Image 1: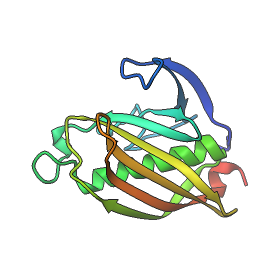
Image 2 (image 1 turned 90 degrees about the vertical axis):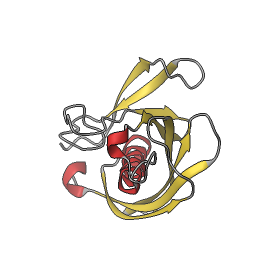
Image 3 (image 1 turned 90 degrees about the horizontal axis):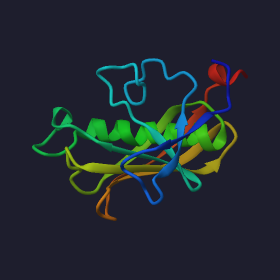
Amino acid sequence: MAESSPEREVSSTSSDLSTGNREELVFPAPGMCFGCSPANAAGLRLRFFRDGNGVLCETEIPPAYQGALGVVHGGIQAVLLDEVSCAAAFFTASSYVVTGELAIRYRRPCPVGEPLRVRATVMADEGRYLTVRADIRARAAADVLSSAEGKFYRDPRRNGL
């Protein structure tokens, strides 16, 4: 997997942002990733879309992944934030990355069974790593439920370096 340029395809989905047509961003080989692989039956099977200078994932987490009653488990929220951050690094900075640091702030309960919008943007390219910010919001509200900032180190094994 020495490819470093992302594959892209245009997709129309029923949960549109504005026009109904969004650019879906697809990893060349997702393997069995818990977060994004369509081949992992136990995973979240997240899908990513271009959103201005960042990457967006719209999803709904089922009750099987709750912590407190009706609330998405904090570890699953971390997965969402980490996955969209890695996707932002790959699709906007053309670099496979590994997570080096992820600081999460849980602000409000994140509901299970309701549509969520998870978005990430690369804030800085420090050469060896990228600084990425991400947040989770309820699709129907503007309030941030959880947010994260992290350092995502370029992966020389997968970037062919």
